[in-house]
Length: 376
Image (tube, rainbow, N blue to C red):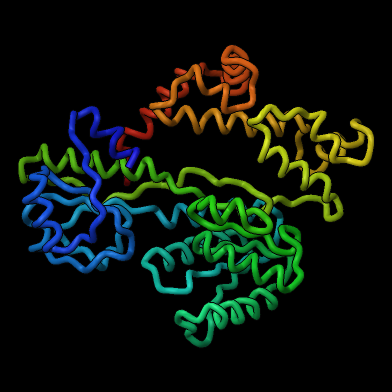
């Protein structure tokens, strides 16, 4: 919704949120009530199948809908599932593992096959094998039976193995059966999900690495498409179906390949991730290690490739960038959320790390997210 409002605010459009399923009856009723110039519909795979006649009354742009539910005259913006799978494959291939696997969503979804195909292709062109979880029998809504079959599959994988799960809920199941089997994460099994659903990713054991979709860009792309439609006066000739790419990989404990016996380094990384933006110092992190500061730093750098302070700064920088991507966030308030003592300190830190001022970085990146680029 944020992406939609970013674009529509420049056109002085009012955006009204309505929580109903997109049926012909509902669309007609809403049109009569609000008299809108168009609608942007985000209902995922749960939408009813619509006909061309359902969409003739006024323009509708769908976000992340199953293409099979939409007629030929529809407009849509969809997550680029192939790009998501390729990004996950690059992350897992960087672990140095030689075996990989894909675990699909338990129920059929239109994006699942595309993610599987792209992941397998990326892994196999690098000369590595890829196993796919294909249970011999359908378990339906029986979650216990599904976990039992998934457990058999995970138990049979060669180790170490990099696992890409269709989404975070599926990845959570993988982590569950891995714990049941007594496997070490990420040394035996390195796991990545999709959606960066914080309620799962931050509360799973261990915390889950995930590919985060660029939902803001999806909304912006839908709004831009709506503008093109309304400005065409019924003679639209552009691309009716557009893709938006994933935003980033959010790395957590499920893919951090550390020395097997260095639990202190793993604990230090989790502390840094959780507390870097609350004023955490390297001295506080060192207290987790039962050794001297010099030796603690040596162990941390050997496992992660950076110093404790550098790891803290990386988290703060990413947080600052996240806040800058919100155009409603005032620059002078960002330091309070990044663990730095003042706005001046943050400005100097940010420019040293990026080579740009915060305002210049924001302008450049917000503009790139608004502008249509290739296949959105």
